Image (cartoon, rainbow, N blue to C red):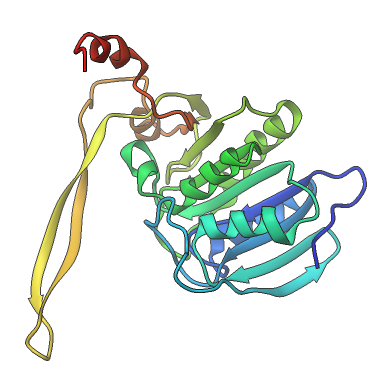
Amino acid sequence: MMQKASDGKPLILVTNDDGIKAGGLVALVNMLTELGDVVVVAPNQSYSGMSHAITVNHPLYAKKVREKKHLTVYKVNGTPVDCVKLAINQLLEKKPDLVVSGINHGSNSSISLHYSGTLGAAREGALSQVPSIGLSLLDYSYEADFSEAVVYARKVVEKVLQNGLPAGSYLNVNVPEVSPLKGLKVVRQANGKWVEDFIERTDPRGRTYYWLTGRFENLEPDATDTDEYALSQGYVSLVPCHLDSTDHELIPQLKEYEL
């Protein structure tokens, strides 16, 4: 059965990539139920680092695990993007007024947004022409304190509900692990990269396997208009993102190649 929204209340679709039991999801939902009718469609386990992955090789199952006034919760055996697709195409009677993904346990600033399942879900919301927000706290612990992150999440959610977002745009919000927070800054994505390493080991059967490790490197540490800088100074960072990946400045140069 499709989920309906109560008359007059915005319908808010919530998902994440840390799984249905993650503390960040619980904290987010507790806040959002004060603002509208909330439908949670979240993975049944962690799907961190899945970016925009979708499931095509096995069926998806959506199990309703909770229902009360202004809140319905489903768990799905799929990725965050699967959850958004399934919700919008099957579980909801109407398109939601807002998609919110998070609150992620760990940073999704700079280049990490390309790997993030949290931002993959927000991107999918934008693809469905729904205003969408990805939220992350720079604390990987499942015992993380989300109380201040929720305050700023609410500020952003309320503004987006009031004003919407341009078609094709979505927001990437990251909250530093400091208290008290200094405020929020609208900034750009920092240019950075992951310096990766694969640890080689041997399993009990003598087979070689590899375990991915790495560290983030900020390639413009002196820039003061980036998310990495804002976070380092104790500010919440808000980066507007867009679906259009075209390098518009390169088009004239490529045309000169006379391909």
